[in-house]
Image 1 (cartoon, one colour):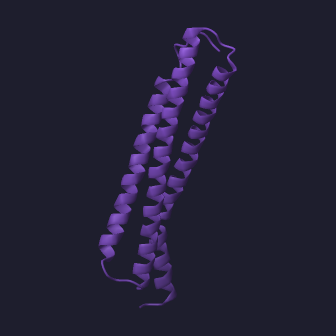
Image 2 (tube, one colour):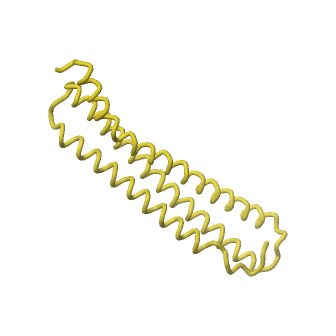
Image 3 (cartoon, helix red, strand yellow):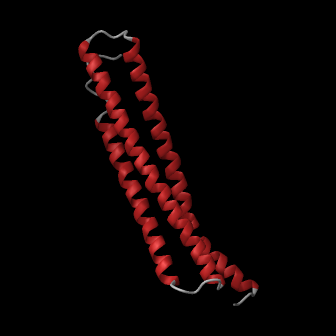
Length: 152
């Protein structure tokens, strides 16, 4: 095992390269969490308005119920996106650890296989999360309530 300062520096640089992807993962988690919070707040606000019973117009009540259901679906999409995003972070973190330990000489068996699989699974999870976020944004736009009977 080479323990020169140059070798250690090189090992750390190689292991930390995927960490930049972790920055993207954490930024996306933050953005999705904000969307989830707004969706949950909207759903609670609508449910509160329905329970108070100030609205008697049947068309408005039906619209409010539909909008609350759509907010629930958006919340589920956000939750799924967060799940895949966190999974991506776990796989990328494993890749960082593997690269560090393999480069440091602590472990040599099946180096390529582990690193490739954890990195690829991390990217697939990240792309899945991005796809779900896109679906949630499109669904949110579609269900924005453009055709509400009246403002409530």
